[in-house]
Every structure is written in C-alpha cells, then in structure tokens.
Length: 301
Image (cartoon, rainbow, N blue to C red):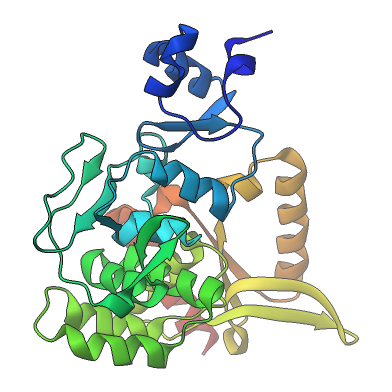
C-alpha cells in the first residue's frame, strides 16, 4: 500500500490532504513516480482517473475565486484544447484568470492575471466556473501567443468546437488595434481543423512562415480504392510528405518499427519523407528541415 491509496479520487490540493499527514514534498514525489498527476498548479489527481471536462472543471474550481473568469490557455485547457509549451508540461504555468473591472484581482501564487473587459456573451458558466467562450478564447490566444502556438490553438478549437475561419475573421474585426491582431488575422486564414495535434500545427506554421506552399493535410494514400496510409502534411504532386512524430505516439518500439515500415513503403514508391519532432523547433533546426522541403519541392518540380 502506498500513500496514494489514502488520497481522494477527485482533484485535491495539498491543503485538502494535510490532515492525512501527507506533505507537499510527498505529493511531489508521488507525482514524479506517476502515481498522481498535476492537473493545474497546486492541484493533483490520481493518475488512473480519466482526464475529462468534468475533472478539469472540478480542479479549476478549487483554486479560482468566484469573481474570476478563466481566460487564455487555462480556458483553452478547460475546453479540451491544450496550448501549453512542451516545457510547461513538466512545471505547469500559473492559471490565467482575470476579473471584470470593479472587482479585486485574484492574488494567489498559482494564479496570473489582472482585469479584463469582457462582454456578457463572451463568458459562460461551466458548473460554477466562469470561462471565456471557445471563440473568444481562441482569438485571444491567436493574438497573445507566437505564430506557432497561436495557430495550434486556432486549429484545436476548429477541431474540437467546430469553429470556422469565418468565425475567427468576424471576431477579430472587433480587435482593432489590439496587440497581435495583425498576426492573428494571418493565422486565421491558415487555420485548419484537420490538424490532429499541436505538433502538426507547429510544423505547418513554420512551413508557411517561410513562404513555402500550403501543404495538404491528412493526405490519404490509397491502393485499389482502399486507404493504406494517411500523411500529416503532403505535397502530392511532388511526392513529398512532412510528418510530425509526437513522443507520446511514436516512442514505443512497436510504433517505431511500424513507422519505419510505413516510410520504407512510401520511399519505395518515390515519396520523400521529412520527419519533424519536438526537438526540431530551434531556429537552426527549423531552417534545416524547411530548407530540405524547399530543395525537395524544387527538385521534384
């Protein structure tokens, strides 16, 4: 039996379990051993409890004041669109929650924010937690984040909440002179809900930022009318594919062997495959693989 068996099955904070004699240091050790997981700064949950909208709301309710509105990346997280940087998945950033003008801002170490003007129709109640709507959250992030993460947020909200480029363009008309709005309008034109992960969105953003042609998303390879493979990003006329390998899906030996066989099959049929991982987004690395795309497109023209 471990300490974890004494902990609640719902989200909890260190203060909520202090009566059990479990210290914050012991909770950190349980998280390091994957017996529990950090779901928000200062909030934990058993690792085998499913990650659902209900558990995310329950976690948020523990650390957000009644006058606060959850915004930006924390709101996206509640809506099922994770927009945290890879490095932040190890040490979670503060919750982003703001208060409407006239209320005192939340002053807790795990919360970041201030005051924000929000219309009544831009805020919804999720079981007692005030959150910006999917559309307001997506466009706020497109303005606030860099182009890579901003595009990933727009793609994610299209995928999970059926938002459209027209929705984004209409909403961004109201953001006149807001910092980041010019870039956000460009990203809205690039957004595509067929991107299946933030990594695919990051890859596409770097391709488009460097003036390369727009690739096809989720391109299907068929043999005798049957789908054989689906490519993350493809230039079919040039028989060029760009694949993002996320660690969570491609790190197992079986998965790596499957990927090798799949790519060998494609290369034997004249395809060039360029693989990108999360470690390939430093400036020099991005220049390297985007130059390879440019060269492959030129040679295949």
